[in-house]
Amino acid sequence: MARSHPTDSTADGLPVLSLRGVTKTYPNGKSALRDVTLSVPEGDFVFLVGPSGAGKSTLIRLLIREELATKGKVMLEGRDLARLNRRDVPQIRRRIGIVFQDFKLLPNKSVRDNVAFALEVTGTPRSRIAPAVDRVLRVVGLAAQADQRPAELSGGEQQRTAIARALVHDPRLFIADEPTGNLDPLISWEIIQLLLRINEMGVTVLMATHNAEVVTALRKRVVGLEDGRVVRDETGAAYHRED
Image (cartoon, rainbow, N blue to C red; front, side, top):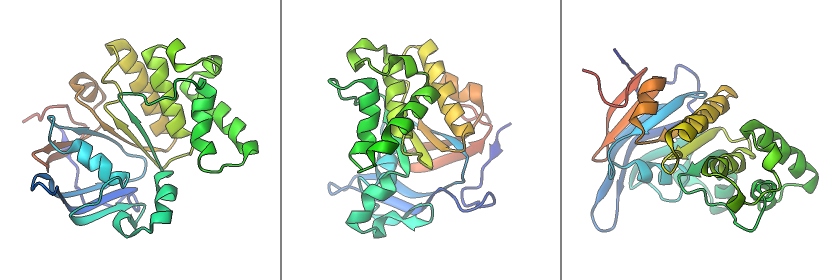
C-alpha cells in the first residue's frame, strides 16, 4: 500500500522546491493549474504523472520561470520566483537542469562542444569548462563519444548528451520532461538508471512521464495531476492509484 506524502512537509529541511496555492490561468480563461500545493525536499525523486492536458508542462514552465503563476507562490530554495529581478533569472535557472524528449542538441557541434556551450554562454572561465565537461561525460558514459556529432549518435546517446549538458552546471534540481518518450524500452531503462545515479549524487529529480512501467517498477514518490489539480501524492506508489 502506498504511503501518503504530506505536501507541506519540510521535515527533511528547507525544500528545494515549494508551490503554495499555485493557480495558472491563461488570457483565454483556461485554467492549467488550480490551487497546487507541493513541497519537494532535497534529494527527493518524484514522478509527475497525469493525462495529457493535466498541467504537467505548465508546472514545469513555472519552475523554470518561463511563465509566472496567476496566484500563489513558486519557491526555489526559498526564493520566490515571481519576485526575482530580471537579471537574477539566468542565475536561478542555472540551479535547475532540464531535459526534454526532443534533445535540442546543436547539430553542428560535437558532444563535447554541445555540453561546453552551456557553460560558455554563462561566461564560465575557459579553464573551468574542459574539466567540468570531461567530468559529466564520464558520469553519463559518453567520454568515448566526445568528438562525435549528434547525427552520429543513437537516440539514447543523444539523450545522454542532453543530460550531460543539463548537469554541467551542478544543478540542485533536475527536471526531466518525458525524457524517454522517443526511446525504445531498453534504452529508456538505461536513461532511468542514469537519472537514479544523478539522484544518488544528491541532486533532486522531478520526472514528468507517461511511462507506467517505469513508475510502477521503481516505487518512488508519485505526484498525480488531473485537470490542473494534485489528486494524489504518495511515496512508494505505482503509476495508477492502488485502492
